[in-house]
Length: 168
Image (cartoon, rainbow, N blue to C red):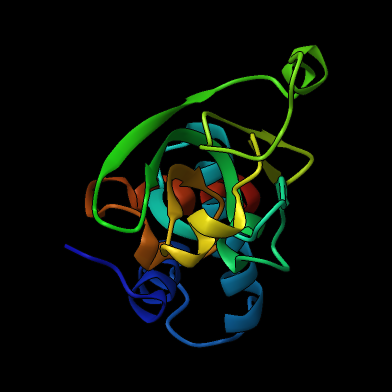
């Protein structure tokens, strides 16, 4: 059964044998649940999502200031380049050290991407013509979350185990 935060708090209260706030407040239990969700999502990499990066001409680095999802991104699994006319092409995941090893790093069709320091690097940088055509990149990734509803139903009990360790 899918858990909401309220259901999770109720389940924890049942485990604690405390139906109402006496010793542990709902706020404290909520913090524990959120901590458990963050631990689960960062260690398991099982909370998956996707996000689009709107390309900017001659820009190689994209951060959460450009696209908010980048702030929660833990591990990119794949990146797909769309040239603006629904022609999709996978681009290669590489280490940013390759940028300096390329003999020519002029703007052109994007071939590589990387995550480094909570920023997405793409290269070669897109041209103005690509941006005008509506080109963008879709990133498939594992993300960090403190939201229990973002976790698949069959795994929602795992973050709540943090509480049993804390209270026992």
